[in-house]
Amino acid sequence: MKVNGVHHRSLWVRPDQGVEIIDQRVLPYTFATRVLRSESDVAEAIRTMAVRGAPLIGVAGAYGVALAMRADSGDDNLAQACSRLDASRPTAVNLRWALDRMRAVLAPLPVAQRADAAWREAQRIADEDVALNRAIGQHGATLIAGIHARTRRAVRVLTHCNAGWIATIDFGTALSAIYQAHDAGIPVHVWVDETRPRSQGLLTAWELAAHGVPHSLIVDNAGGHLMQRGEVDLVLVGADRVSARGDVANKIGTYLKALAAHDNGVPFYAAVPSPTIDWRIEDGLADVPIEERAASEVREVAGLDAAGQRVTVRIADESTPVSNPAFDVTPARLVTGIVTERGIAPPGELAALFPEHRRAA
Image (tube, rainbow, N blue to C red; front, top):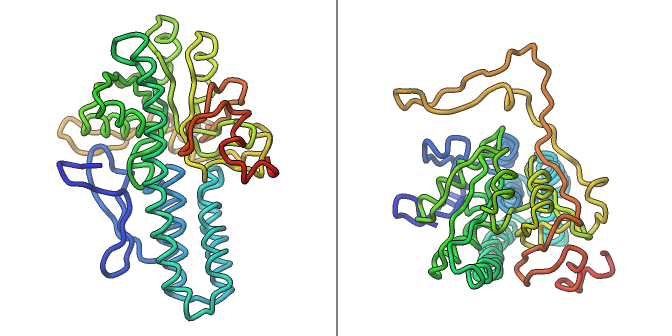
């Protein structure tokens, strides 16, 4: 996708083999990049959400292994690097998937060959992410096209969190469908949940504005009201992990959108690449770990002051107790379908799209 007319991926390798990222902590107010030069830099960037979004976290983790192998390609460092990176964010399964893949490729190789092989494999994972997201968008755009064919008006899509190109290497997951529908001439209007406390909806609004997609930023609690009034045709979100039976773990507040959609007969879809599906977990409500993040995210709000300077404002005193679960799980019974790179399936039929996982499912 483009920023100020220039194509960017959200992560890329520099000629000096540093890994450069777009620092998402300062978006949408400032576009800034940062260079990661070590595995610990990558882990810190993941923990602090300088890189965020399940697919992007997975790719970043792969490059973290590559950076670790450049420093020390031994067995102990390979195992320890994967373990340290895996601990940086517990909910998004793409990270574990990418680390497992890197370990499977590198462990059988002679130590002297691992550093170069790690860079090649990380690049393959990054390029595959772009291809997966492009395909997801093609399938998801058919949902939007079908609604437009029936209604003959702009399709009103409600999103939650950010599932755009900045959360992946390129294209995005849920937003990939919106971009491709828009580019095909299908009129779309997006209701953008602000998504407190990290306000990732601002990233979605920033992306949509850059691509020329009509949208409105709304407070998180407005979605149910809009559905009651018949102003939402489709809820389309991303995910950080999907269980084998189709439970969807996504940014906190997604479950409430699914409940409102179910009550009002609005279809609810999650758009995910296959590495986001955790075939080892059947019951997402019981088995997906839910990250508890810092209380400061709830007690403080970031924005711009009257002079256009970035400021952080405290809205609750340090003495105020805070709970800050970062994700919730939408049970499969509330999910209309899962959009993947291989097509769209009801949650209970995911294994039909991925028969190689049928036994595990």
